[in-house]
Image (tube, rainbow, N blue to C red; front, side):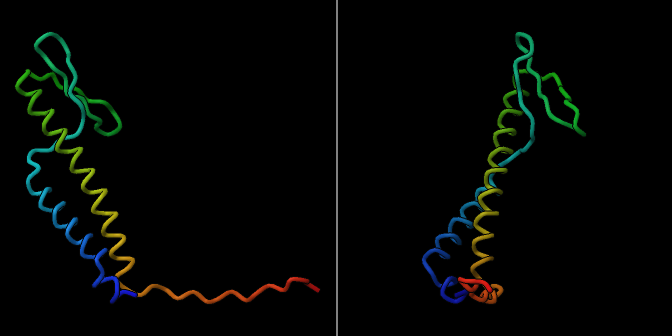
Length: 112
């Protein structure tokens, strides 16, 4: 099965998607988690969790724009990682022979 899979159209499709995603990773730019929300007119607040506690920092409008972009990059990073894991698991499970299961003995229809 593994030889067939490594030469299959599905494998090549997954390999191509993996390559595209890894190239996209290289171009993501700055990353951070959290969220940016308006605070007072002309000021913003960046909030995130640190050791199970919410930490907030006041930001200027230009800083807020930079943080919004970095947060979007972080969310894209997480989505790419999820997809890369899914692709990797499919390829790994199908690239080598798995454990052979013993066939279960048939149970008697009319037990004694």
